[in-house]
Image (cartoon, rainbow, N blue to C red; front, side):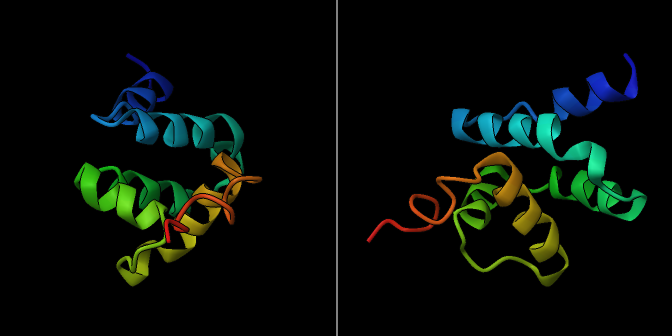
Length: 89
């Protein structure tokens, strides 16, 4: 299994919503990341699904992930980002 396939496999999660966001990011933003950002994204994928989904929705996240989460939100859900993710009042 090559690196791209391994990464795609790691982005397969227990939540369909996470699958869609992470796969969207791989398709639209992964190629733009610097080496350090790719390493950080890999670390982000080690986090629990529940935490990751909350952070994507805008819940406070560990400071080290703030930048990559912002990129992830922007690339994977550019039009719905401000309207739906994190706005469940």
